[in-house]
Image (cartoon, rainbow, N blue to C red):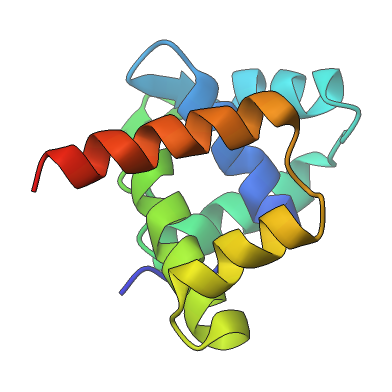
Length: 127
């Protein structure tokens, strides 16, 4: 099971997931956080990266005096795990309850609603 991560850890993972290369270096993570308006002290980032490694989200390889970090959990894997957790916690596992709430609560833009309809019809036709 994929663990939950803190908001600060999630910001770091978004930078790593958004990186075009397979590996990312510490300075790039620092720069990415600053660019997102979430600057971080060096020691704080070291602690957060260590936590992400302990939780199984990151791997690190020492290159000289620097670490190369690699995501071990993909963004899609994390989103799926968090969606399942949310569904179970809030809607007792009912995807219908979630979608109904999105529609009835007027939380979907018209384009999103139409796209959801297309996805449901496409999925329904594949069975």
